[in-house]
Length: 125
Ligand code: FES
Image 1 (cartoon, rainbow, N blue to C red):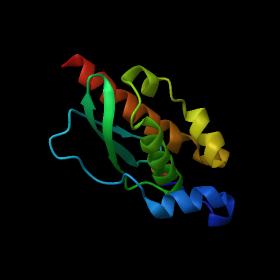
Image 2: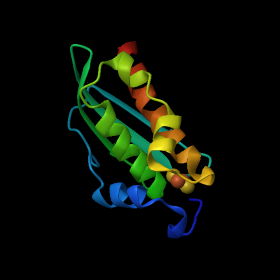
Image 3: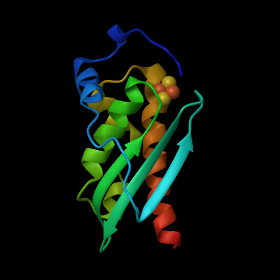
Image 4: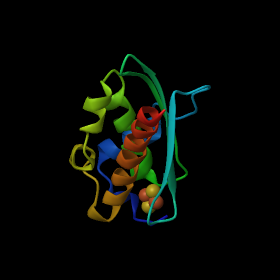
């Protein structure tokens, strides 16, 4: 993990990370993917999918506040989207929406890659 002072985080990031919405595991998921980041942390996404729609999203990460906030926001945005719509979500939208410091951009990228890989794994089935 790459540590930064909490003062570097926007209030929104801190609030979202503390809520930890959508954190957890889905039993019998339709798709799963785990991605490791340059910092040594990981993100794992679980999806429930029906008719190309993401019905449920959960994540696990031992990563930093930026990773938790990114995963929570990404899960919230992706839930209810089609797979193609979910694939169009960018790290930039998370970074800008949360106001992440540049040193933490990779945490948002890791979250997006994990979600996209989960969709990719589902489509390979
Ligand atoms: S520094 Fe590793 S997940 Fe953020």
